[in-house]
Length: 302
Image (cartoon, rainbow, N blue to C red):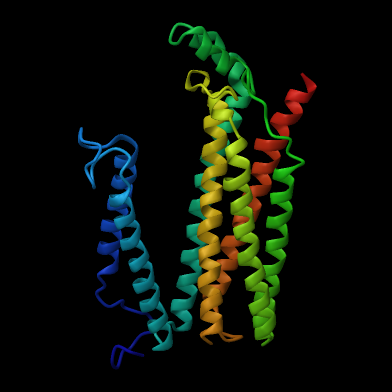
């Protein structure tokens, strides 16, 4: 143990600056994003607070990156020092399970919204008329709303589905290879998983999203914006963000593996990353079914 002659199996964390530094970085990044969209001063040429200026956001992002490197480095040092006893290891596993459970509930909220809008849009149209004009009412009275041309789910979305399912098999391969002492297999499996995660992100944000006009009714006019587009982008966009986070998670595990920090009996970091990645896979299957396929079939049947 690294904290002297202790009489218990628990780990009392040393004072750390990273929670406070990370909070500052998150605040700067969030504020910087708002500034880039709206600005906090009338002068758009203001380097930090003018509309369209991203400097504050990137400063916050840099602080967050430094926080991740420093904080993760401290955790690795604690593990090497023997602080992660079997009792602490169980606590880490419970913590990761609870974290994934909280993420499940996060996506439950988006699915709940999507299902509620899809199932009860006809009933809502009966009482929404006194509150909004007819163009807004039409967006609630139909699902998908008028002017929306949904993606054919059996092209790009199906391709991304196959990519994620394949990545689930490669990360499982990497995990089992490490358990059996096959470090080369673990390395190759992780490399493939990271590449597949990057491929998914490129197809979604670089190819699919530029062609998705749902938020504007496929007419390019904000006046035709509809709730279907908002729910589509919120649900799939947050999933895409989770894919990026999971890819970074796995890339860090790959670097740790190459540095010899994982052994067949001690590699919880990789296990946690694999759990998270499988969660991302399962969420996508629900998104593919209920956000891509069902609205498309509904429109085909009308």
